[in-house]
Length: 249
Figure 1 (cartoon, rainbow, N blue to C red):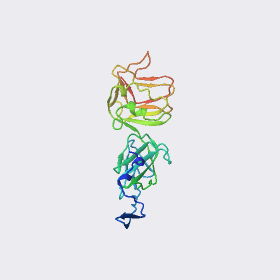
Figure 2: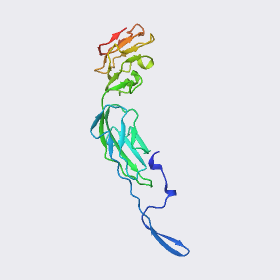
Figure 3: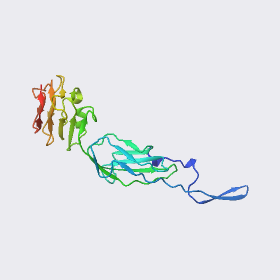
Figure 4: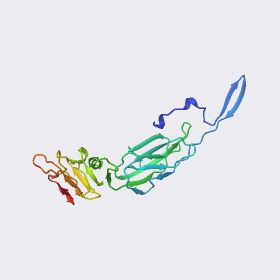
């Protein structure tokens, strides 16, 4: 819930801290109320300021603020936090496991809410961090296609595939190299990392828009079928691609 729309004023005495007067049976009784203090600004823990991580599903952690009942979290690719890519409002924990964040440079900040209306700590100073390293299959992504497509258009990225036999839609007819510079490689080499097309589709396709520096290394591609007489395992049409240590069966 976005904290700015929460209204608790109907269930709370005024916290203005002013002298009040109550008329009861013709007598005037006076009392003062105490202005509540907002919670302290949280301390950001991880990712640390200036750090570089290789996790595309990062965990954000910050200190618990005395008096806080919830927190707001923002993550953005700019220090002004215009159009944040992560926004959590009225979040009641101090650790947040994020969804996918692609490689890049980011900023994050947290603020704390107290139990009273308007008891807001303000935003913390922002931490800056970078995400690098490969997109990993299958530990981060279930198939090769989903790892390739997370790389933004006109950007470069590495997809690292663990040893296994990969079958099905997400692992064959891989044409998503277009407009991306992709380094697709296996961690175990062609003997243990196999793309099996099941005699129903081609393996890899590269068109004239394939990004510069695209490469494939360390796969066996088997049981591939070409379209219209074109290549079955690897089809290059006007593309410049580096192929290393691959086996076609």
